Image (cartoon, rainbow, N blue to C red; front, side, top):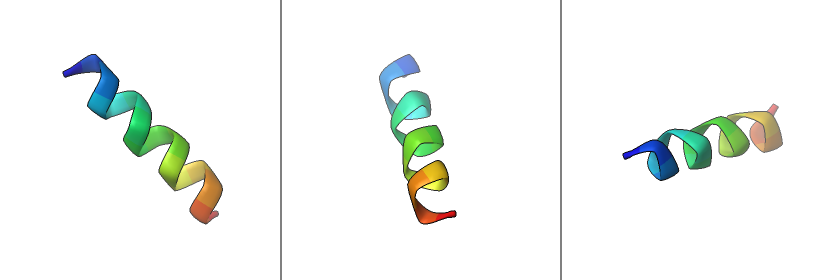
Length: 16
């Protein structure tokens, strides 16, 4: 679960 949250955070940062 934590891995998914980290992935989303990284994705959001990259998308930004």
